[in-house]
Amino acid sequence: MQRSLRATVLLLIGGLALTACGSGSTDKPAAGGKVTITVTGQPPKTQSVERKLFDQDVAEFEASHPDIHIEPHEGFMDPKTFSAKLAGGQLEDVYYVYFTDPATIIARRQAADITDQVKDLPVLKQLQQPLIDIFKDRNGRIYGLPTANYSMGLLYNRALFTKAGLDPDQPPATWDEVRADAKKIAALGGDTVGFADLSKNNQGGWHLVTWTYAMGSQVARQDGDKWVADFNNDKVKGALRLLHDMRWTDNTMGAKQLLEATDVQQMMGSGKLGMYLAAPDNVPVLVKQFNGRYEDYGVAAMPGGQGTLLGGEGYMVNPKASPDKIKAGLAWIQWKYLNPDRIETRIKQYLAEQQPIGLPAIPTPDIWTGDVKAKQNALKAQYANVPAKNFQSYLDGNGTLRGNLEPPNAQQIYAVLDGVMQAVLTNKDANVDQLLTDAEGKVNSALAQVK
Image (cartoon, rainbow, N blue to C red; front, side):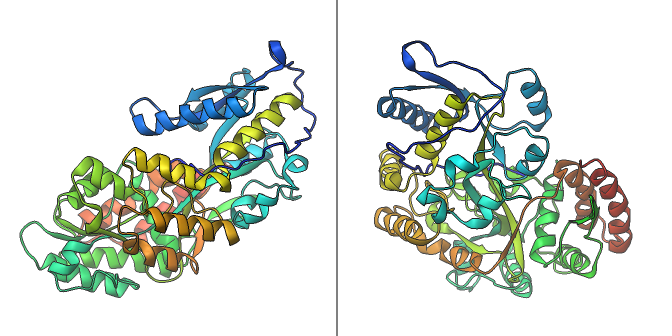
C-alpha cells in the first residue's frame, strides 16, 4: 500500500563486465563516448536529506564511471501512466517498481531480460532468494533486482506499556495478548486508546489484507489462469470478530473511527495510543512529524506466528533500451542500491545528517543474507543512535513468518475491503459473515480484470 523508505544499500561492481542482451532500440552513446540514461527514484525537494544524498550519489557515480551520464527524474511508480509512457517512448531507461508490479510487467514484456548480465554476480547469492524470485518469469529468467523490502509488524508505545504495568521488552506475541494488553493500556483512562486500526481511503482494506495474512489465510489464489478471492473463511472471520470485540466489548479502540495513517500516527506521537499495525518506517515519522521520541517506541513481529504482509521495491530496465543503456543502467542499479562495500559509507552519511541509525531497514534495507547481513547488522549496532533493542523482537520474529505480497489489482480490492473494516468498527451489530460474502463477490469482479 505505501512505499517503504528508500533503499540506500549499494553494490560496487568496479570493472565488472556486463554483456548486454539485445533490445529493440538502436540508441547511440552520447557525444564524447558517454551513454546517457534516465532513471527514476530521485526524491522530491521536500525530502531534503534524501534528495541531497541521492544527488551526491549521482555525482559520485559519474566520477567513478566517466562513460555514463545519469539524468535523474523525480518520482517512482504510477501504474496508471506506466503503459502509456512506455508506448509513447517516455518511460525512463531505469525505472522503479513496487513488488506488486513485476509479474504483470514481465507478462506484458515491458522490461528487459537481464538474466545473462546478472547471473554471475557474487552479490546475487547474498540477496534473499524470495525477493529475487519476484523479478523472475516462469522460466526463471530475471527482469529486475530488488533494492528494499519491509514487512508489517506491531508498533507499540513502550512508555504506555510501562505505565500500564506491562514489560516493554516483552511485546505481545499472540492476538490474545494484544487484546489483554490493550485492555490494560485503555484502563489508564482519559483519552488513552489501547489499539487502533485504519478503515478509510483504501488503508482499511490494506490493513484487512494484513490481518488476513497474519491469521494464516490468503486474499486471493490462482485457479488455473485466473485469480479468485480466498478470504471468506473462519480465519478472517476470527480477525474481524476480534476487532469487533476490542471495539465494542472491551472499548479499547476508542470511539473515534474511520481513521487513516496520519490519525494513528498523531495519536501515537502524542502518547495516547498503545499499539497499531505498521512497518518500522513509521517510527521516524512519529519522531519527526509528531514530536515523539525514539526511546518510547518498539516494533514487534506480527503476532500469531503465521504470516505478514511483505512489500518492497526494485528496479527494472526499459525493454526498448539499447545494449549500452542496459549495461549502464545495471551498473547504476548495482552501484547505487546493492553495494555491500558502501554500507558503512551510507550509515556515516545518515549520521552526518542526524538521521536515525539502528532501525530495521534504515538507512540500509534488510534484503541480505549471509556475510553481508552479518556485516550490516554489526555496523548498525556500532553506529546506532537510537535504541536498536526496541526492534529486536521484530527482526527475530520475522525469520519464521511467511511473507505475502499484496494481491493483484490491490487498490480495487482495498476499496472493497474498506467497507468491511468500516462496518465492523462503526456498527456494533455488523454481520461479519454477510460482509465477507458481499465483499467476496466484489473482489472476484476486481480479480477478473487481472490479465
